[in-house]
Image 1 (cartoon, rainbow, N blue to C red):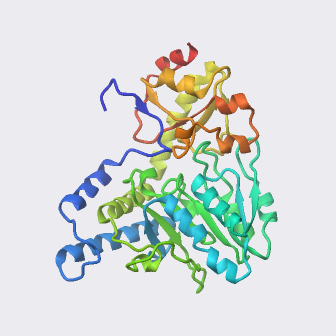
Image 2: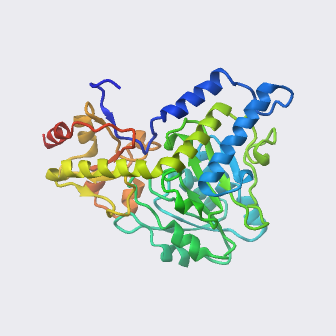
Image 3: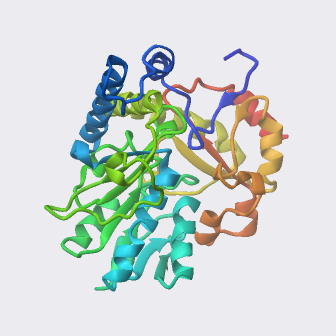
Length: 378
């Protein structure tokens, strides 16, 4: 990055790739390009060995078995497989009720809305004004006919961490399947995701300093009972028949290494992000920002902030030569629709229109704080 380039502060949309991961991905694109399904020669054997290694790295991160790791194209596909893949079993077993929240990513909201149009009943739980869902309120919606409870681990727009452990504990022996969209926390908030009451877990490579185009769905067996997922795509039988197609070996090995580095380095990465956060808030204090989310309940690398008196569009234009930020989810920012997350929190129109999301990482250099604040003041 040249000195004149803006500092990238949109890591919740996608992270830069860890240099070690990028090097490994390139090696498997250029040197070891075999198909892991080819059994008759060394290229295929080495590719399969590399994929098996990646499966082990991911399984170790979340304390699952290697046969519980299903590779996908990303968390969006993983979410769709986890939700829509349960529908056939749910209908045949009289389990046609779903509990989720109004702050989920569109990749969870839209598949559930599809099921709602197809006869499923859905209870949507709203967050409080700080963006956090109450675990007890969510658990009170669970019924004997509940098929699925789906709750994101941390919100992509606000960074607010949701009560995953409390919900897992509260579900206990209830037969409902528990799905966690862990796109923002996989390889970051490590201990929570090792809870074996989480049946289904979605993640993307490009959110954890790995490559785009690859993700994972953890499908945990509950004692001897397998999660009764039905595939959405057919042809080839790969990934236990759940997700057929030739595996992108370079991307898979990149995701594997990114997961291993996340497990080994998450503490030191957190430390850097906390320090960056303190400097960020110190710098913007004179601007009287309205911060969305209670400190201590928000990811260390995320801040959703409204500045009184002007819109996020104005603010982003003023500072774009210094920092690259967004006003919400990368999936919906092109449409300039008001954030469904901030609306669900009950914020006023001015706060919603003025909200900007700053998100950084351990690889983010410090911007010119003084210059940033001066531009915003003007």
